Image (cartoon, rainbow, N blue to C red):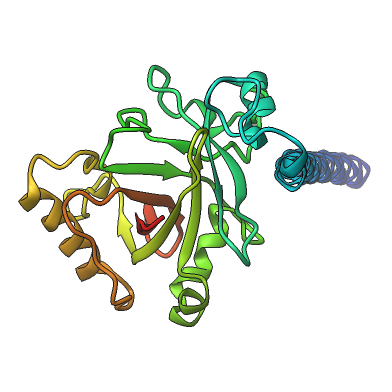
Length: 266
């Protein structure tokens, strides 16, 4: 009896050891897989950032050399610095730049394919960074308000850099957003910075305002943005002004958004 008991105990111990080894192996495998995914994500993000840097560099170099080149590119009515990029991808409709941030990117627009550049790079390949893009129902030349989306990437990358505008001190030193269309350079002064919950009955649907039905509708939008603003900028807008509204994720609430509204001044 004792021998049988010993054998049973050994079998149970071996079985437990086997299960322990299996569980440990599984957990190690999961950890390795997760580590690989994280490494792959950050590696790809770094590659995409380098691509953006090269694109931005080419734009700056072209602008610097404009004294030796025509003010427009070989593509009719397109500014010289954007002509080559437009030939590479005709979805590009402009360029956004904010001083003292990492924001220095092309802006895309695909009216027939909403959110196309949410997870695609400038060359249309998969990218977790995406490319800033304009809401599909906006008209780049005619809309009262162009709504521009960009990912909130850690390290103040992409539109994650808008986090700095939660500080009024930062705003006071960086009130201007540069947004160029392909044919016209433009500067926009910030009116309001606010956080909001998207796609909620309790949230303000700022993304619904693209074209004002009348002066009252325009004024209502501006008044609401200023009411929600984290601080008073002292800047407003009147009917007829052209606006841009930058939107990115904000993580203090579920489905939160950080929004920056600005009017064209130049």
